[in-house]
Image (tube, rainbow over all chains, first blue to last red; front, side, top):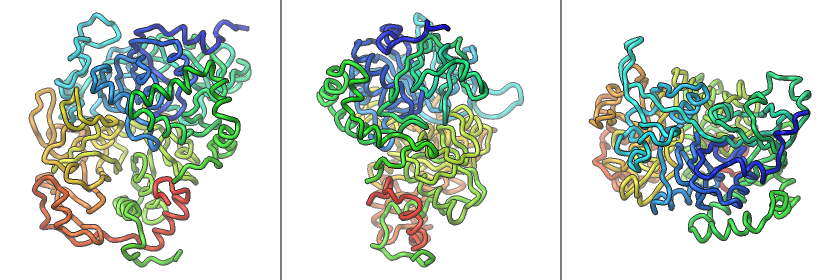
Length: 325
Length: 272
C-alpha cells in the first residue's frame, strides 16, 4: 500500500515555499483548508502570491499575518459574517499588499486554462468595466509583468475580435493561472490520493489541475479500494495528488457539506477583530500562535460548539445551529 | 392573516420586507434567475411561492434550481443545493450564463451612476490607494453583463447615487470600451453578446428604471411614506422624476406571512 503521500499538517506545510503562488479549494467561507492555513502562519510563510477564484476568511488570515505579497482574485470578504476583507483593505492602502482585480468569470476561465494546459482562454464577461482598464493593472504597475517570473503573465488582458463567426463586440483573452501549489480541503481521500468531494464542487477541479503540486486535507482518509467502488463520484485521480492529510473539522470555521456548518459567530468575531492590525494580531496570538496544533484548537473551540455545527445526515447541514439575529 | 391578499399598512412591515416584495415582482414565471446572497434570496424564494412557481434559480457556487427548505446564508451554502436539479461548480454555471440561458440577474452595489454603472470595488482616493476598499466584483459584472435583465437592490444615499462612480465594477447602459476607455453605449461595447441590461434599481426609498433610448435612470415609484423630494435629496445627479407612477405597492399580509413564517423564520436576513 502506498503510504508515501500520507503526512502530518506540519510536514505538508513544509512542502510550501516562501514566494510560492498558492490557490485553494472551496468558495468564500466554504471548505477552505484552515488547518493548513493556521500552520502556514505558525511556520511564518512569506511573500506568497495568492491566486484564487474568490478569497475569504482563509485569505484574510494569511494576509493579516503578513504571509502574502500579491492577491489576485475577484472578491474577498466573509459573506454574511463580515462585509469586506479588512486585512486586505488595510494592507492595500498601506502598500504592503498588491491586489489584482479580475471578475469571477475571468478567474474561473484563468483556472480552466491552467487546468487545460493552454496559455489563455477567451471570454465575453464583464466588458465595459474598469476591471479591463489598462491603468488598473496592479502587477504591471509594480513591474511584475516583465517576464522574469514564469507564473506571472506579461499582460493582464488581451482584446480581440471574433474571426470565426464574425460576431460583433470585444472578446477578451484571460491568461492561465499557473500556481505552484493547490491546498484543498475535501470530505474524503483514498489512501493513494483519489479525491472525492460531496456537494457543490465550486472550482476545486480547475484549482487542483492548474497547480503543479496538490496538498489534500480530508475529513477522512478511506481505503483506496473503497473510494474506487464508485469512480464516477470521484473528482481528482490519485496521480495528481502529492500529499494527503487526515484532519477532521480541518475546514473550521468555514463549512463542509455533509460534515459541518459555517461557524458564523466565530467568523463574525474574527472579522470584528480585523478592523485593526492590533486586533488581528491579538486574535492570531490567541487562536494560532498560542495553539500548538489543530487538535488543540478544536479542544479550545469545545465539543458543545462543534456538536451544534455538525451536519444533519439527511439535510447535509446543521439544523441546530442558531443562524439569525 | 394567512390568506389575506390585501396590502399591509405602513408600520405593519419592515423596509426589508417591502424590498423583498418589490424584488419578487420583477420575476416572471418560468424564468431562469441568477441571484446573489441576501435580499435577492428572499425575493426569488418569495416569487417562487407566489407569482413565479416555475422560476429556476442558479447560484454562482454551482447549484441549479435548488428547492431549499431552509434559507441559505450564502450561495456556497449546502442549503442551496437541497433537492437541486444539478449541483456542480462555477465553470458550469458561469458557462451557462455566458451561453445565454439566464433571464434575470439580482445583484447589489455600493455606488451607482445615472446609467446604472455599479461600483463594489473601491471608493475615494485613487484605485491603488482608496479611502474605502470593498469586496471587489465577485460575479456581479459577469452576471449583469450576460443576463437579459438585471435588478439591483441598494441603500439609497446621496453619496451612493453619483454622477460618476469611482470605479465601474458592473456595467450599465453607457460604458467604457477598452483598451481605449471611450464612453460608448452598452450595445456597442457588447456587440453580438448584447442581451439587455439593468432594468430596475430597488432602494431603501424608491424604485428606479432606465429610459430605453438614453439609458438614463428615472424615478418609477416611491416607497410609502417617502416623497419625491426626499428621493431627489438622496440622489447626487439630476434625476428625472416626471414619470413617477406613485407609490411602490406595499407587501400583502400573505406575502408577509410567507416571508416571516415560511421563508426566513430564523430571521437570517429579516432580523427579529
